[in-house]
Amino acid sequence: MNIIDRVIGWFSPQRGYARAAWRGALRHYDAGDGSRLNANWRAINTSAEQTDRYSRDTIRARARDLERNSDMLNAVIGAFGRNIVGGGFNLQAETGDTDLNQQIEKLWTQWCKKRNCDVTGAQSFSQMLRMAVRRKKVDGGMLFVKRYTGDGLLPFKLQAMEVDELDGSAITARHKGNRVCGGIEYTPYNKPVGYWFRQYSIDGVTSPEPVYVEAKDVIFYFSKRRPSQLREMSDMAPTLSRIRDANEFMVAENTKQRILACVALFIKKINPNLGRGRASASGKGYDRRMFTPGMVNELEAGDEVDMINPQGQATDAAQYVKLLNRLVAAGQGLSYEAVARDMSGSTYSSTRQNLIEDGMTYADEVELLVEVIDEIYESFLISAVLADKVRIPDFWAKKDVYFAHEWVKPPKPWIDPAKEATAVMTALKTGQKTFKQIAAENGKDWRDQVDDIAEVLEYAQDVHGLDLSSMIFGQQGGEPAPVTGGGDSDGKVNEDEGGGDGE
Image 1 (tube, rainbow, N blue to C red):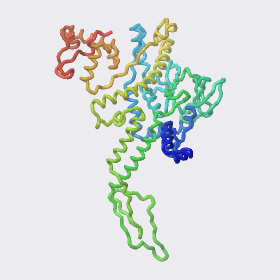
Image 2 (spheres, rainbow, N blue to C red; image 1 turned 60 degrees about the vertical axis):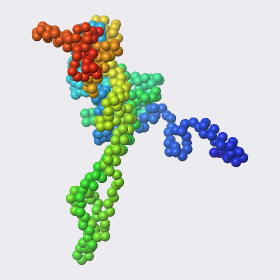
Image 3 (cartoon, helix red, strand yellow; image 1 turned 60 degrees about the horizontal axis):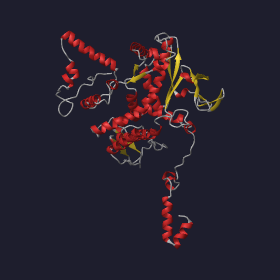
Protein backbone atom coordinates (compact mmCIF):
# COMPACT_ATOMS: atom_id res chain seq x y z
CA MET A 1 0.00 0.00 0.00
CA ASN A 2 1.53 3.32 -1.08
CA ILE A 3 1.17 6.71 0.60
CA ILE A 4 -1.82 7.72 -1.54
CA ASP A 5 -3.71 4.59 -0.51
CA ARG A 6 -2.94 5.30 3.12
CA VAL A 7 -4.20 8.89 2.88
CA ILE A 8 -7.42 7.79 1.18
CA GLY A 9 -7.85 5.00 3.72
CA TRP A 10 -7.47 7.45 6.58
CA PHE A 11 -10.25 9.68 5.25
CA SER A 12 -12.43 6.87 3.88
CA PRO A 13 -11.63 3.28 4.91
CA GLN A 14 -14.22 2.03 2.42
CA ARG A 15 -12.53 3.74 -0.50
CA GLY A 16 -9.09 2.62 0.73
CA TYR A 17 -10.24 -1.01 0.98
CA ALA A 18 -11.77 -0.85 -2.51
CA ARG A 19 -8.53 0.50 -3.97
CA ALA A 20 -6.53 -2.29 -2.31
CA ALA A 21 -8.96 -4.92 -3.63
CA TRP A 22 -8.80 -3.58 -7.17
CA ARG A 23 -5.02 -3.35 -6.99
CA GLY A 24 -4.86 -7.04 -6.00
CA ALA A 25 -7.25 -8.00 -8.80
CA LEU A 26 -5.11 -6.21 -11.38
CA ARG A 27 -1.94 -7.97 -10.26
CA HIS A 28 -0.21 -10.01 -12.96
CA TYR A 29 1.69 -13.29 -12.47
CA ASP A 30 2.90 -14.41 -9.06
CA ALA A 31 5.94 -15.96 -10.78
CA GLY A 32 6.85 -12.50 -12.08
CA ASP A 33 6.42 -10.75 -8.75
CA GLY A 34 9.55 -9.30 -7.17
CA SER A 35 8.40 -9.51 -3.57
CA ARG A 36 10.27 -11.12 -0.69
CA LEU A 37 9.32 -14.68 -1.66
CA ASN A 38 10.90 -14.27 -5.12
CA ALA A 39 13.79 -12.05 -4.05
CA ASN A 40 16.42 -14.71 -4.82
CA TRP A 41 14.83 -15.81 -8.09
CA ARG A 42 16.86 -14.01 -10.72
CA ALA A 43 16.65 -14.97 -14.37
CA ILE A 44 17.38 -13.27 -17.69
CA ASN A 45 16.30 -13.92 -21.27
CA THR A 46 19.01 -14.86 -23.76
CA SER A 47 19.20 -17.00 -26.88
CA ALA A 48 19.32 -20.75 -26.41
CA GLU A 49 22.92 -20.99 -27.59
CA GLN A 50 24.05 -18.25 -25.23
CA THR A 51 22.24 -19.95 -22.36
CA ASP A 52 23.59 -23.43 -23.16
CA ARG A 53 27.12 -22.53 -24.19
CA TYR A 54 28.54 -21.87 -20.73
CA SER A 55 26.86 -24.86 -19.06
CA ARG A 56 26.96 -27.50 -21.79
CA ASP A 57 30.36 -29.00 -21.02
CA THR A 58 29.88 -28.93 -17.24
CA ILE A 59 26.47 -30.59 -17.41
CA ARG A 60 27.79 -33.22 -19.80
CA ALA A 61 30.72 -34.00 -17.50
CA ARG A 62 28.43 -34.29 -14.47
CA ALA A 63 25.96 -36.46 -16.37
CA ARG A 64 28.79 -38.79 -17.40
CA ASP A 65 29.99 -38.96 -13.80
CA LEU A 66 26.52 -40.03 -12.68
CA GLU A 67 26.32 -42.46 -15.61
CA ARG A 68 29.36 -44.20 -14.15
CA ASN A 69 28.25 -44.02 -10.52
CA SER A 70 24.46 -43.71 -10.25
CA ASP A 71 22.05 -46.61 -10.46
CA MET A 72 19.12 -44.19 -10.68
CA LEU A 73 20.43 -42.48 -13.81
CA ASN A 74 21.20 -45.82 -15.43
CA ALA A 75 17.65 -46.93 -14.66
CA VAL A 76 16.33 -43.97 -16.68
CA ILE A 77 18.72 -44.62 -19.55
CA GLY A 78 17.87 -48.32 -19.53
CA ALA A 79 14.13 -47.60 -19.79
CA PHE A 80 14.66 -45.46 -22.88
CA GLY A 81 17.09 -47.90 -24.45
CA ARG A 82 14.73 -50.86 -24.00
CA ASN A 83 11.72 -49.09 -25.42
CA ILE A 84 13.17 -46.90 -28.17
CA VAL A 85 15.45 -49.41 -29.86
CA GLY A 86 14.68 -52.65 -28.06
CA GLY A 87 15.30 -55.55 -30.40
CA GLY A 88 16.08 -53.22 -33.30
CA PHE A 89 14.22 -52.01 -36.39
CA ASN A 90 13.29 -54.46 -39.14
CA LEU A 91 13.09 -53.12 -42.68
CA GLN A 92 10.05 -53.52 -44.90
CA ALA A 93 10.88 -52.18 -48.36
CA GLU A 94 7.85 -50.97 -50.33
CA THR A 95 9.10 -50.42 -53.85
CA GLY A 96 6.08 -52.10 -55.44
CA ASP A 97 8.20 -55.03 -56.62
CA THR A 98 8.05 -58.02 -54.27
CA ASP A 99 11.26 -59.62 -55.53
CA LEU A 100 13.13 -56.32 -55.32
CA ASN A 101 11.78 -55.75 -51.78
CA GLN A 102 13.12 -59.10 -50.65
CA GLN A 103 16.48 -58.45 -52.28
CA ILE A 104 16.84 -55.06 -50.59
CA GLU A 105 15.74 -56.41 -47.21
CA LYS A 106 18.22 -59.28 -47.41
CA LEU A 107 21.05 -56.91 -48.35
CA TRP A 108 20.09 -54.54 -45.49
CA THR A 109 20.20 -57.42 -42.99
CA GLN A 110 23.71 -58.29 -44.12
CA TRP A 111 24.86 -54.67 -44.08
CA CYS A 112 23.64 -54.20 -40.48
CA LYS A 113 26.31 -56.60 -39.22
CA LYS A 114 29.22 -54.93 -37.47
CA ARG A 115 31.79 -55.83 -40.10
CA ASN A 116 29.75 -54.05 -42.77
CA CYS A 117 28.09 -51.01 -41.17
CA ASP A 118 30.62 -49.81 -38.57
CA VAL A 119 33.84 -48.29 -39.85
CA THR A 120 35.56 -49.63 -36.72
CA GLY A 121 33.98 -53.08 -37.08
CA ALA A 122 33.01 -53.06 -33.41
CA GLN A 123 29.20 -52.67 -33.36
CA SER A 124 26.22 -53.84 -35.32
CA PHE A 125 23.70 -51.25 -36.49
CA SER A 126 21.28 -51.99 -33.63
CA GLN A 127 24.11 -51.66 -31.12
CA MET A 128 25.08 -48.31 -32.61
CA LEU A 129 21.49 -47.14 -32.26
CA ARG A 130 21.35 -48.20 -28.61
CA MET A 131 24.58 -46.32 -27.98
CA ALA A 132 23.15 -43.25 -29.73
CA VAL A 133 20.08 -43.27 -27.47
CA ARG A 134 22.31 -43.54 -24.39
CA ARG A 135 24.61 -40.75 -25.56
CA LYS A 136 21.65 -38.50 -26.31
CA LYS A 137 20.29 -38.94 -22.81
CA VAL A 138 23.68 -38.33 -21.17
CA ASP A 139 25.68 -36.12 -23.56
CA GLY A 140 22.77 -34.51 -25.36
CA GLY A 141 23.46 -36.08 -28.74
CA MET A 142 25.75 -38.03 -31.04
CA LEU A 143 26.93 -37.68 -34.62
CA PHE A 144 26.93 -40.25 -37.41
CA VAL A 145 29.50 -39.51 -40.11
CA LYS A 146 29.09 -41.24 -43.46
CA ARG A 147 32.35 -42.84 -44.53
CA TYR A 148 33.08 -44.38 -47.91
CA THR A 149 35.70 -47.14 -47.80
CA GLY A 150 36.85 -49.92 -50.06
CA ASP A 151 36.13 -52.84 -47.74
CA GLY A 152 32.97 -54.51 -46.52
CA LEU A 153 29.72 -55.43 -48.23
CA LEU A 154 29.22 -51.87 -49.51
CA PRO A 155 31.58 -48.90 -49.71
CA PHE A 156 29.23 -47.05 -47.33
CA LYS A 157 29.84 -47.26 -43.57
CA LEU A 158 29.12 -45.22 -40.45
CA GLN A 159 31.46 -43.62 -37.94
CA ALA A 160 30.02 -42.72 -34.54
CA MET A 161 31.38 -39.42 -33.19
CA GLU A 162 30.93 -37.88 -29.75
CA VAL A 163 29.85 -34.26 -29.41
CA ASP A 164 33.18 -33.57 -27.66
CA GLU A 165 34.88 -34.06 -31.01
CA LEU A 166 33.29 -30.94 -32.44
CA ASP A 167 35.99 -28.28 -32.43
CA GLY A 168 34.47 -25.43 -30.47
CA SER A 169 37.79 -23.69 -29.74
CA ALA A 170 36.60 -20.61 -31.61
CA ILE A 171 33.21 -19.67 -30.17
CA THR A 172 32.30 -17.58 -33.19
CA ALA A 173 34.34 -17.44 -36.40
CA ARG A 174 33.89 -17.10 -40.14
CA HIS A 175 34.42 -19.59 -42.96
CA LYS A 176 33.50 -18.91 -46.58
CA GLY A 177 31.21 -16.11 -45.45
CA ASN A 178 29.33 -18.37 -43.00
CA ARG A 179 29.45 -18.36 -39.22
CA VAL A 180 31.25 -21.10 -37.33
CA CYS A 181 29.87 -21.60 -33.83
CA GLY A 182 30.59 -24.54 -31.55
CA GLY A 183 32.46 -26.35 -34.31
CA ILE A 184 29.56 -26.16 -36.80
CA GLU A 185 29.37 -23.88 -39.82
CA TYR A 186 26.00 -22.20 -40.36
CA THR A 187 24.37 -20.16 -43.09
CA PRO A 188 22.67 -16.85 -42.15
CA TYR A 189 19.53 -18.95 -41.59
CA ASN A 190 21.31 -21.19 -39.05
CA LYS A 191 21.36 -24.14 -41.41
CA PRO A 192 24.44 -26.38 -40.87
CA VAL A 193 26.65 -26.66 -43.93
CA GLY A 194 29.76 -28.21 -42.39
CA TYR A 195 31.28 -29.67 -39.23
CA TRP A 196 34.78 -29.17 -37.81
CA PHE A 197 36.02 -32.27 -35.97
CA ARG A 198 39.03 -32.49 -33.71
CA GLN A 199 41.53 -35.16 -34.65
CA TYR A 200 42.58 -37.65 -31.99
CA SER A 201 45.54 -39.98 -31.99
CA ILE A 202 45.06 -43.51 -30.72
CA ASP A 203 46.06 -42.42 -27.20
CA GLY A 204 43.40 -39.70 -27.14
CA VAL A 205 45.67 -36.69 -27.64
CA THR A 206 44.30 -34.10 -30.04
CA SER A 207 46.20 -32.75 -33.03
CA PRO A 208 46.15 -29.01 -33.75
CA GLU A 209 44.40 -29.22 -37.12
CA PRO A 210 40.64 -30.03 -37.18
CA VAL A 211 39.04 -31.79 -40.16
CA TYR A 212 36.14 -30.30 -42.08
CA VAL A 213 33.22 -32.54 -43.14
CA GLU A 214 30.31 -31.30 -45.23
CA ALA A 215 26.89 -31.42 -43.62
CA LYS A 216 25.53 -33.83 -46.25
CA ASP A 217 27.82 -36.50 -44.79
CA VAL A 218 26.94 -35.86 -41.12
CA ILE A 219 23.80 -36.76 -39.17
CA PHE A 220 23.52 -34.86 -35.88
CA TYR A 221 21.19 -36.75 -33.56
CA PHE A 222 19.89 -34.41 -30.83
CA SER A 223 16.67 -32.74 -29.66
CA LYS A 224 16.04 -29.12 -30.59
CA ARG A 225 13.82 -27.42 -28.01
CA ARG A 226 14.14 -23.74 -28.97
CA PRO A 227 14.35 -22.05 -32.40
CA SER A 228 17.64 -20.39 -31.44
CA GLN A 229 19.23 -23.64 -30.23
CA LEU A 230 22.25 -24.64 -32.31
CA ARG A 231 23.75 -27.58 -30.44
CA GLU A 232 22.86 -30.29 -27.99
CA MET A 233 22.07 -30.18 -24.29
CA SER A 234 21.96 -33.26 -22.09
CA ASP A 235 18.44 -34.68 -21.77
CA MET A 236 19.21 -35.41 -18.12
CA ALA A 237 19.92 -31.75 -17.27
CA PRO A 238 16.57 -31.09 -15.49
CA THR A 239 16.99 -34.12 -13.21
CA LEU A 240 20.73 -34.27 -12.53
CA SER A 241 20.40 -32.39 -9.24
CA ARG A 242 17.78 -34.85 -7.95
CA ILE A 243 19.93 -37.83 -8.90
CA ARG A 244 22.95 -36.24 -7.23
CA ASP A 245 20.87 -35.62 -4.08
CA ALA A 246 19.83 -39.27 -4.02
CA ASN A 247 23.44 -40.42 -4.37
CA GLU A 248 24.71 -38.14 -1.61
CA PHE A 249 21.81 -39.05 0.67
CA MET A 250 22.36 -42.76 0.20
CA VAL A 251 26.08 -42.39 0.97
CA ALA A 252 25.25 -40.58 4.21
CA GLU A 253 22.51 -43.06 5.11
CA ASN A 254 24.75 -46.00 4.32
CA THR A 255 27.51 -44.58 6.52
CA LYS A 256 25.04 -44.06 9.36
CA GLN A 257 23.74 -47.61 9.16
CA ARG A 258 27.26 -49.05 9.02
CA ILE A 259 28.27 -47.10 12.14
CA LEU A 260 25.13 -48.19 13.99
CA ALA A 261 25.95 -51.81 13.12
CA CYS A 262 29.43 -51.59 14.66
CA VAL A 263 30.17 -52.75 18.25
CA ALA A 264 33.07 -50.79 19.70
CA LEU A 265 34.86 -50.59 23.08
CA PHE A 266 36.53 -47.43 24.37
CA ILE A 267 39.02 -47.54 27.26
CA LYS A 268 39.01 -44.34 29.29
CA LYS A 269 42.21 -43.79 31.36
CA ILE A 270 42.37 -41.74 34.55
CA ASN A 271 46.05 -40.90 34.20
CA PRO A 272 47.95 -40.38 30.99
CA ASN A 273 50.91 -42.55 30.01
CA LEU A 274 54.00 -40.52 30.97
CA GLY A 275 57.46 -41.18 29.69
CA ARG A 276 60.63 -41.32 31.80
CA GLY A 277 62.68 -38.31 32.78
CA ARG A 278 61.70 -35.31 30.82
CA ALA A 279 59.39 -37.26 28.49
CA SER A 280 55.89 -35.91 28.21
CA ALA A 281 52.53 -37.47 27.44
CA SER A 282 52.33 -39.51 24.26
CA GLY A 283 49.53 -37.43 22.70
CA LYS A 284 48.40 -40.09 20.22
CA GLY A 285 45.45 -38.11 18.88
CA TYR A 286 42.49 -39.45 16.91
CA ASP A 287 43.20 -38.35 13.36
CA ARG A 288 41.97 -40.76 10.66
CA ARG A 289 40.42 -43.09 13.22
CA MET A 290 37.35 -44.90 11.87
CA PHE A 291 34.67 -47.16 13.24
CA THR A 292 35.29 -50.81 12.51
CA PRO A 293 33.40 -53.85 13.80
CA GLY A 294 34.82 -55.02 17.16
CA MET A 295 37.07 -51.96 17.46
CA VAL A 296 38.92 -51.42 20.78
CA ASN A 297 40.39 -47.95 21.22
CA GLU A 298 42.01 -45.97 24.02
CA LEU A 299 41.03 -42.44 24.99
CA GLU A 300 43.40 -39.79 26.21
CA ALA A 301 43.13 -38.75 29.85
CA GLY A 302 40.21 -36.40 30.29
CA ASP A 303 38.62 -37.27 26.93
CA GLU A 304 35.06 -38.50 26.71
CA VAL A 305 33.07 -40.13 23.93
CA ASP A 306 30.09 -38.13 22.73
CA MET A 307 28.11 -39.85 19.97
CA ILE A 308 26.04 -37.95 17.42
CA ASN A 309 23.04 -40.10 16.56
CA PRO A 310 21.16 -38.74 13.53
CA GLN A 311 17.40 -39.04 13.83
CA GLY A 312 15.32 -40.97 11.34
CA GLN A 313 14.82 -44.60 10.50
CA ALA A 314 15.60 -46.62 7.41
CA THR A 315 11.91 -46.46 6.43
CA ASP A 316 12.14 -42.67 6.25
CA ALA A 317 15.14 -43.03 3.95
CA ALA A 318 13.22 -45.41 1.71
CA GLN A 319 10.33 -42.97 1.38
CA TYR A 320 12.69 -40.09 0.59
CA VAL A 321 14.55 -42.04 -2.09
CA LYS A 322 11.22 -43.15 -3.53
CA LEU A 323 10.12 -39.52 -3.75
CA LEU A 324 13.34 -38.57 -5.53
CA ASN A 325 12.85 -41.50 -7.89
CA ARG A 326 9.35 -40.29 -8.71
CA LEU A 327 10.59 -36.75 -9.38
CA VAL A 328 13.40 -37.99 -11.63
CA ALA A 329 11.03 -40.24 -13.57
CA ALA A 330 8.45 -37.46 -13.96
CA GLY A 331 11.15 -35.05 -15.10
CA GLN A 332 12.01 -37.46 -17.91
CA GLY A 333 8.36 -38.01 -18.86
CA LEU A 334 8.15 -41.53 -17.44
CA SER A 335 6.23 -43.25 -14.69
CA TYR A 336 7.86 -44.23 -11.42
CA GLU A 337 7.30 -47.92 -12.18
CA ALA A 338 9.12 -47.70 -15.52
CA VAL A 339 12.25 -46.31 -13.87
CA ALA A 340 12.26 -47.97 -10.44
CA ARG A 341 10.84 -51.29 -11.69
CA ASP A 342 8.72 -51.27 -8.52
CA MET A 343 5.24 -52.66 -9.18
CA SER A 344 4.28 -53.16 -5.53
CA GLY A 345 1.71 -50.35 -5.55
CA SER A 346 0.37 -50.90 -9.07
CA THR A 347 -2.88 -52.34 -10.31
CA TYR A 348 -3.64 -53.67 -13.77
CA SER A 349 -5.45 -50.46 -14.73
CA SER A 350 -2.74 -48.15 -13.42
CA THR A 351 -0.06 -50.22 -15.12
CA ARG A 352 -1.94 -50.02 -18.43
CA GLN A 353 -2.33 -46.25 -18.09
CA ASN A 354 1.34 -45.82 -17.26
CA LEU A 355 2.30 -47.92 -20.28
CA ILE A 356 0.17 -45.69 -22.50
CA GLU A 357 1.66 -42.47 -21.12
CA ASP A 358 5.20 -43.85 -21.23
CA GLY A 359 4.59 -45.02 -24.77
CA MET A 360 3.82 -41.44 -25.81
CA THR A 361 7.15 -40.32 -24.37
CA TYR A 362 8.99 -43.08 -26.19
CA ALA A 363 7.09 -42.31 -29.42
CA ASP A 364 8.64 -38.81 -29.57
CA GLU A 365 12.12 -40.27 -29.25
CA VAL A 366 11.38 -43.06 -31.74
CA GLU A 367 10.21 -40.48 -34.29
CA LEU A 368 13.48 -38.56 -33.95
CA LEU A 369 15.58 -41.72 -34.21
CA VAL A 370 13.64 -43.00 -37.23
CA GLU A 371 14.51 -39.79 -39.09
CA VAL A 372 18.16 -40.68 -38.55
CA ILE A 373 17.64 -44.27 -39.71
CA ASP A 374 15.73 -43.09 -42.78
CA GLU A 375 18.65 -40.96 -43.93
CA ILE A 376 21.06 -43.83 -43.32
CA TYR A 377 18.83 -46.21 -45.30
CA GLU A 378 18.68 -43.84 -48.27
CA SER A 379 22.49 -43.58 -48.31
CA PHE A 380 22.65 -47.38 -48.04
CA LEU A 381 20.36 -47.88 -51.02
CA ILE A 382 22.25 -45.36 -53.16
CA SER A 383 25.51 -47.14 -52.32
CA ALA A 384 23.93 -50.51 -53.14
CA VAL A 385 22.86 -49.25 -56.57
CA LEU A 386 26.28 -47.68 -57.27
CA ALA A 387 28.04 -50.88 -56.18
CA ASP A 388 25.72 -52.90 -58.44
CA LYS A 389 24.48 -54.97 -55.50
CA VAL A 390 20.92 -54.04 -56.48
CA ARG A 391 20.01 -53.43 -60.10
CA ILE A 392 17.34 -50.79 -60.60
CA PRO A 393 17.54 -49.31 -64.13
CA ASP A 394 15.32 -46.28 -63.47
CA PHE A 395 16.51 -45.67 -59.89
CA TRP A 396 17.80 -42.11 -60.45
CA ALA A 397 14.58 -41.05 -62.13
CA LYS A 398 12.35 -42.54 -59.41
CA LYS A 399 14.43 -42.41 -56.25
CA ASP A 400 11.49 -41.45 -54.03
CA VAL A 401 9.55 -44.50 -55.24
CA TYR A 402 12.39 -46.88 -54.40
CA PHE A 403 13.15 -45.14 -51.10
CA ALA A 404 9.65 -46.06 -49.81
CA HIS A 405 9.87 -48.30 -46.75
CA GLU A 406 8.64 -48.89 -43.21
CA TRP A 407 10.33 -49.89 -39.97
CA VAL A 408 8.89 -52.67 -37.83
CA LYS A 409 9.91 -53.26 -34.25
CA PRO A 410 9.56 -56.55 -32.34
CA PRO A 411 6.48 -56.43 -30.09
CA LYS A 412 6.50 -56.02 -26.34
CA PRO A 413 5.29 -58.91 -24.19
CA TRP A 414 1.65 -58.62 -23.17
CA ILE A 415 0.57 -58.07 -19.58
CA ASP A 416 -2.63 -60.06 -20.11
CA PRO A 417 -2.42 -62.08 -23.36
CA ALA A 418 -6.09 -63.12 -23.31
CA LYS A 419 -7.39 -59.56 -23.05
CA GLU A 420 -4.91 -58.26 -25.60
CA ALA A 421 -5.78 -61.02 -28.06
CA THR A 422 -9.50 -60.30 -27.64
CA ALA A 423 -8.91 -56.60 -28.32
CA VAL A 424 -6.91 -57.43 -31.46
CA MET A 425 -9.65 -59.73 -32.76
CA THR A 426 -12.30 -57.09 -32.13
CA ALA A 427 -10.27 -54.42 -33.92
CA LEU A 428 -9.75 -56.78 -36.88
CA LYS A 429 -13.43 -57.72 -37.18
CA THR A 430 -14.67 -54.13 -36.88
CA GLY A 431 -12.18 -52.82 -39.42
CA GLN A 432 -10.34 -50.61 -36.94
CA LYS A 433 -7.12 -52.42 -37.87
CA THR A 434 -6.01 -54.47 -40.84
CA PHE A 435 -4.10 -57.72 -40.81
CA LYS A 436 -1.10 -55.78 -42.11
CA GLN A 437 -1.19 -53.38 -39.15
CA ILE A 438 -1.57 -56.18 -36.63
CA ALA A 439 1.36 -58.07 -38.13
CA ALA A 440 3.48 -54.91 -37.95
CA GLU A 441 2.58 -54.42 -34.28
CA ASN A 442 3.78 -57.97 -33.68
CA GLY A 443 7.08 -57.19 -35.40
CA LYS A 444 6.35 -59.34 -38.45
CA ASP A 445 5.97 -58.79 -42.16
CA TRP A 446 2.35 -59.53 -43.07
CA ARG A 447 3.42 -61.29 -46.26
CA ASP A 448 5.74 -63.59 -44.32
CA GLN A 449 2.97 -64.28 -41.83
CA VAL A 450 0.50 -65.21 -44.59
CA ASP A 451 3.15 -67.41 -46.21
CA ASP A 452 3.79 -69.14 -42.87
CA ILE A 453 0.09 -69.83 -42.36
CA ALA A 454 -0.27 -71.19 -45.89
CA GLU A 455 2.83 -73.38 -45.44
CA VAL A 456 1.45 -74.86 -42.21
CA LEU A 457 -1.95 -75.59 -43.75
CA GLU A 458 -0.42 -77.15 -46.87
CA TYR A 459 2.01 -79.32 -44.89
CA ALA A 460 -0.69 -80.58 -42.53
CA GLN A 461 -3.04 -81.43 -45.42
CA ASP A 462 -0.53 -82.99 -47.82
CA VAL A 463 1.68 -84.89 -45.37
CA HIS A 464 -0.67 -85.85 -42.56
CA GLY A 465 -4.12 -85.37 -44.08
CA LEU A 466 -5.11 -82.88 -41.40
CA ASP A 467 -7.33 -79.86 -41.99
CA LEU A 468 -6.17 -77.14 -39.60
CA SER A 469 -8.20 -74.35 -41.20
CA SER A 470 -10.93 -74.63 -38.56
CA MET A 471 -8.35 -74.36 -35.81
CA ILE A 472 -6.80 -71.24 -37.32
CA PHE A 473 -9.79 -69.51 -38.90
CA GLY A 474 -12.66 -70.82 -36.76
CA GLN A 475 -15.57 -73.10 -37.60
CA GLN A 476 -17.47 -73.17 -40.88
CA GLY A 477 -19.44 -70.10 -41.70
CA GLY A 478 -16.91 -67.87 -39.95
CA GLU A 479 -18.22 -68.71 -36.47
CA PRO A 480 -15.55 -68.70 -33.76
CA ALA A 481 -14.38 -72.01 -32.35
CA PRO A 482 -15.09 -72.63 -28.66
CA VAL A 483 -12.15 -72.48 -26.28
CA THR A 484 -11.71 -73.40 -22.66
CA GLY A 485 -9.88 -70.31 -21.38
CA GLY A 486 -9.36 -66.63 -22.05
CA GLY A 487 -11.52 -64.65 -24.46
CA ASP A 488 -14.86 -63.09 -23.57
CA SER A 489 -17.03 -63.77 -20.57
CA ASP A 490 -19.06 -66.36 -22.52
CA GLY A 491 -16.01 -68.57 -22.89
CA LYS A 492 -15.44 -67.86 -26.59
CA VAL A 493 -13.00 -65.90 -28.69
CA ASN A 494 -14.00 -64.26 -31.96
CA GLU A 495 -11.21 -65.48 -34.22
CA ASP A 496 -7.48 -65.68 -34.31
CA GLU A 497 -5.59 -62.58 -35.43
CA GLY A 498 -4.69 -64.42 -38.61
CA GLY A 499 -8.35 -65.02 -39.41
CA GLY A 500 -8.82 -62.09 -41.75
CA ASP A 501 -8.49 -62.23 -45.49
CA GLY A 502 -5.37 -60.08 -45.30
CA GLU A 503 -4.59 -57.40 -47.81
